[in-house]
Image (tube, rainbow, N blue to C red; front, side, top):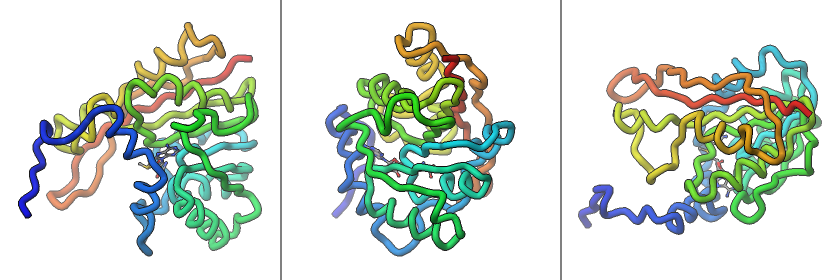
Length: 229
Ligand SMILES: C[S@@+](CC[C@H](N)C(=O)[O-])C[C@H]1O[C@@H](n2cnc3c(N)ncnc32)[C@H](O)[C@@H]1O
């Protein structure tokens, strides 16, 4: 059967976009025997954590655990959470293989069911990489995630920048899913009742990604905030 891929034929309502944030969707995605992601840590995490002293870390929407395993190897005590139990089982296996099974705890987290992944103000570092949520849900979910940052601790948000759609680096998965630093700063900025936050990084750097047609520059959104108290 011929399949159409024109944007106007996709259901991009917030309801339809939320389907792509379900355990069923991601369990199927992670269900194969192969890794979906590379197993290596995200470049932005490596860059942003370089100047921090290891403590407790929460990796939100951890996927297969490339970031969590890397953090554990750097001396962090890591909790890794995701909506996909299939992904979490892979994290646990990966952690055992790498000899850091005792430094990583795994846990179920569904951002749509309860935006708070952990207890209030508990982690020295909360990192969330590439969790793109419908715009109407963004403030609730990212405030819930930020709630887990301890006083003096950091929130690191890494995401795909919307520019990638125009450069051909990425398809648009729905309106408003990818975001710029401003969306994070507007949510967790001066008006956040749970602040105040110090902005330690708000940047849109590019990196080269290998594609079938050769290397392509992709742009990331990177925001690092410190909870002042
Ligand atoms: C693009 S992947 C990024 C994975 C990992 N952070 C990384 O950088 O490799 C998005 C992740 O978000 C998780 N996710 C999707 N919907 C979620 C939800 N409602 N609550 C929590 N995690 C969710 C998926 O299971 C998936 O692992």
